[in-house]
Length: 126
Image (tube, rainbow, N blue to C red; front, side, top):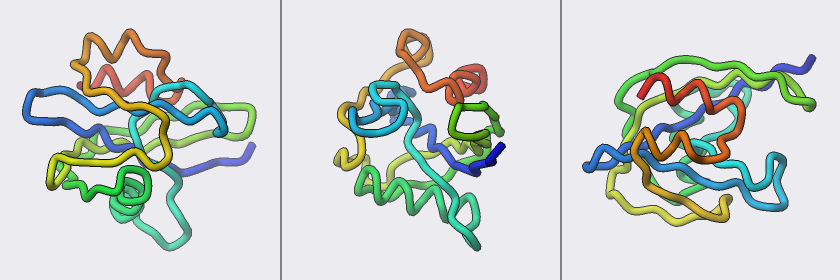
């Protein structure tokens, strides 16, 4: 099975809420909610990939606070290995580029979303 190394940013605001984004209808896992991020490119560190992905997906710069852990999930298209980091946005503002919707939610309300399967274990770390 193909392994896909990816990163995710658990972006926290000053109100202790977390940013969750809904995948666009034209993407795989359409309609699912996720913590933003994406694939690690060849010769790229996880941290540099995360900063690049947040810039590409949200047109924002993020500060990486700490590594939270790694999850793994086997989808039909491959095994996703997800490296997760707690972050905040440098300026607190962002624009959705890749996603169709976003929400700032506390941990309890995040659990009510239809999260992408690889993202579900992240709730235990918050």
